[in-house]
Image 1 (spheres, rainbow, N blue to C red):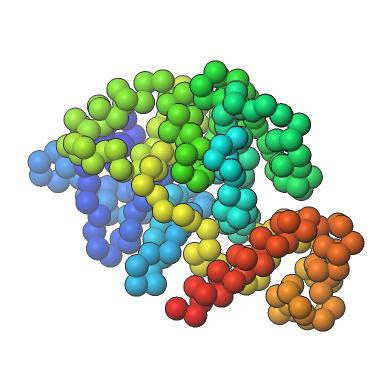
Image 2: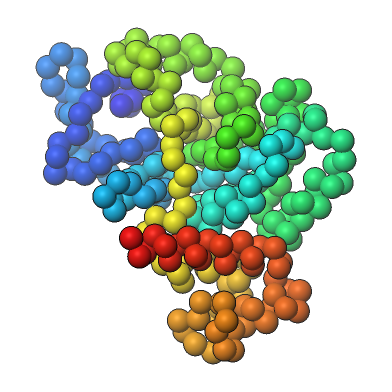
Length: 280
């Protein structure tokens, strides 16, 4: 835990308080051995969660403002995972920015832009960056000012490289955190909130599992596709799943080209995944 004066204090949490997570604002009290005890978790303005073992919901990060969904020119983007992240952000009223990393390796930038066209058309900001050359990082830093942000994306897209580029002294900060809190090597797998040089905070959560569908209903998933939102109320049935339901306005919008067919097909895949989770 970081105190109001910037001191790092190793704390444990009272059982009745609940599970604290990175980004939480807490009340605490000192205890023996220069340690602390969390006595209260203050109200959260947002909470990102993931499914845990035994059907439990585990918090990932609290008081976030936005998630930076990172893809890259390689490996091939996992658009289903991207859509899952974006649906989760919509559901939890978090901002989302699509960041395409490794742009220095791109041979055809117009093709990359076309890959992102469906997202740009529905209002998601798109940033083309290179952690290696620094291209686009100024725009990314501007997006982070005054915000609490977290990077998310599939393995290999360069999230660590971006974090290191945004936090040039990250290694020194991590070492200082380890020494102050006595975390040792475990710091490398612990979610950490860093204060950015230009203002704002960046949550680095290297060990976090995929988040997205925790606590979401079938209706939440449909509403998480922001281009569906204008059509949901026009469906004939209130419990429409937007699959083969009669009078489905969403499916009609897909057929007339007003909703991306590719995004709709991925919605169907996430719907199957969500139904599987519900049946467990």
